[in-house]
Every structure is written in C-alpha cells, then in structure tokens.
Length: 215
Image (cartoon, rainbow, N blue to C red):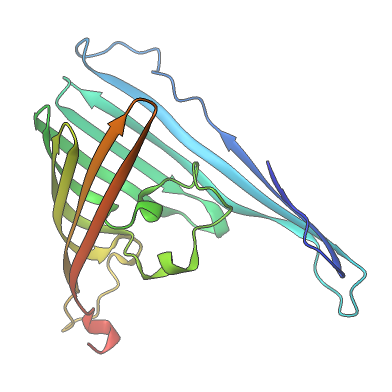
C-alpha cells in the first residue's frame, strides 16, 4: 500500500492498495515438461479523503487498475501472454502476444505489446518507484500491434520492431483513412563488477502520423 500525505491545508490523505494474484503454475497436466501456464493479474485501488478546504472536494475510491490474464510456455520455445484491464468500467486489451524463441539468444514476438522504448515505460506498474510514471514518459509510445525481434548477448541486447495502431484503438479507423505505423528499436549495454554495475540504454522510433489525426 502506498500512502501520500501532502503538506499544508487543505488536508488530504490518499492511499493506493496493490494486490497481486498468485502466479505459480496451475495444477494441470502439461503437454511436455517444458510447458506451463500461469494466472496473472493485479488490483490497484485508490482512495482519497479531504478536509479543511474552502472548496468542497469529493471523497471516494476508484479502481486504478484491474488486470487479469494468463501467461505461459509451450515446449520451451513458445511463450504467450493475454492480459485484460477491467478498470474504469470497461474491458481493454493490454497484452496479447505470441513469442517464438529460435535460439537461447534470439526471439521474435508478434501481437499487441509494448514497443521497445523507454526503460520507465517498459517497467511494469507493479515495479514503478512512484504511483505513476514521470511526465516525460508521456512522449514514449506504449502498446501497439506489431512484430519485433530481440537478440541477446552476455553484456547487451537489441530489440527492433515494426508497429501499427495502438492496441486500444483497434477497429476505429474510418473508411478511406490509413493507420499510422512506426519502426521502433532499443539497445542496452551492461557492465557488472561484483555487486555493482552500470547500464546504458538508447531508444529511437520513426513514426508516421495516424491518418485520423489529420497527418
């Protein structure tokens, strides 16, 4: 639970409660020893109470995020994840992807997932330092439909992909309008010594505007 107490008046107490679902393998017969499936999800509940204000403020609670889905591995070479968000009174697809590992250090993923851009954006809301990501992150692309390849080496990894429409805008393109598209990539280099180390990441994206935005 995260609780926020700002200084001064009017008084405010705001709390965020984060609940995780168990993520252990389900008790089900596997196709092979290298296959498994997990239930994934989380609930983030916000609440706020105000006092001492000249202007009445609304007290109450709100569901920030309600996630439920499944993730797993098949035969040790296929990975998948499907996750829905049911917060704010509507169901929205967050992740829906399938990944094929061709080599221990080379994989290709297709579907709806986060573009490889910005360490803060790629960090799950389960692990962000603060309640929300920083303001500069508003410029970073998030989940889109696309396909991306990722290559790993002992001290670095590179991911490059071709992406189209954002996953929460599926089916909204008008007749005669084309969806935008983008090429996005990220490279990361790491160097560790003992218990410490340094990591340097660089991301870039080349995008065409969505035709519906007048681009």
